[in-house]
Amino acid sequence: MPVPPSRLLGAAAFLVGAALLSPPSLTAQSAPSIPFEKYTLPNGLEVILHVDRSVPIVAVNTWYKVGSGDEQPGRTGFAHLFEHIMFMGSQHVPVGKFDQWLEAAGASNNGSTNFDRTNYYETGPSNALPLMLWLDADRMGFLLPTMDQEKLDLQRDVVKNERRQNVDNVPYGRFLESVLPVLFPTGHPYSWEVIGSMTDLSAATLDDVTRFFRTYYAPNNASIAIAGDFDADSAKAWVSKYFADIPRATAPVRPTVPTVRLARDTMLVVEDRVQLPRVYQVWRSVPALHTDDVAMQALAQVLAGGRSSRLYRTLVYEQQVMQDVGAYQQSAKLDGMFVLQATAKPGQHPRAAVQAFEQEIARIAREGITSRELERVRNGMRARMLDELSSVLGKADRLNYYNYFAGTPDFAAQDQARWDALTSADVQRAAATWLQQPKVTLSIVPQGKPDLAITGGSR
Image (cartoon, rainbow, N blue to C red; front, top):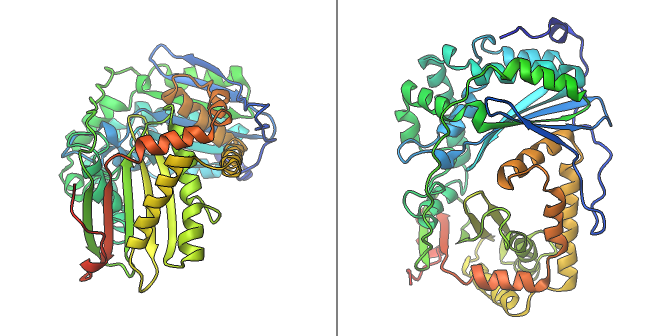
């Protein structure tokens, strides 16, 4: 593995920050466009290039097609654990130097994990591109020679502490851990939290994580998107120089997804260290890019997406019985879920929220949404798309997303076309189809106050 260019390590580089580019036009008449070039190395690594010379900044975004949904029961949390391990140095990058060398070049980096993928990204001045690529290649091809029990134990403790902060010791943090095993059948890839369980994290061995890396962290299970101010021919040469010799691995076997849905409504109650009761209602819905995906996203916005939404106006402003209310559609690669939630004000019972949920869902299933609501959610989508595509990192991530979920990076225009074609009748049909099915109702209440839960058993 060649050493990185020394001029990048010693340069008095400048910090660019989250520079905004000239935003693409996002109207019904003008669909977004992210010009790109895609090719594949002989070892299977997919490479996507998007040149934008608006500002002298470049982003490298690498997607490994592995998330918590690729784990096995009893061995959960590995994908997220590896997100941490990948920053612990590799054969040619001593511990701590990954961040140090990037910062010296004026660049920054991070990563994230979800059900379906793990990504790693860097953003910085254009002259840092060869360094970014070299560092990413070294940990893809040369992580295991320096992987040892000390590194595993250190990052395992970091992840455990993260779990304590975000799940175990945070108000309402046990929401997903309580709902997912009920919402999805046993063995479903989404039936456990991304961060994994304490028991599984404690049980992970060095052999386990080594096997996980060899299975999923191979070039033929990854795509790398480069976006920003760079010369395409130079980038191709660097990619070939640093990545081409990394051997491919046997293609991983993806899990078989059960198609069973909930047979009946289910009530769950969790007593926790919270001050106010909160109720969640969760339905199985649709995966990303499904026909009803945008309709479900629109439905979430109309119901509880901001202060002008129906439930916020009713429960927070008019009745003043809820402290907050929210909704979202989570569309993953294999499946999806729709969530409504509300936190009661002191002295109030969350049953008022459940009654309002039922009334508004029934109303939309019967009447659809108004033209004003439809335009509001369309404008919100365009604003979110503009925001994402205003940065080279956002463009790189969106190209990787489309590449994995749609099978091609060239899907921005088709994605917006789904919103442009959305009608009130589509939202009405989605509400009637997906939110009339059995659901999970979870009440998280203060310890010793089960009377504040939504009860009634299962039907």
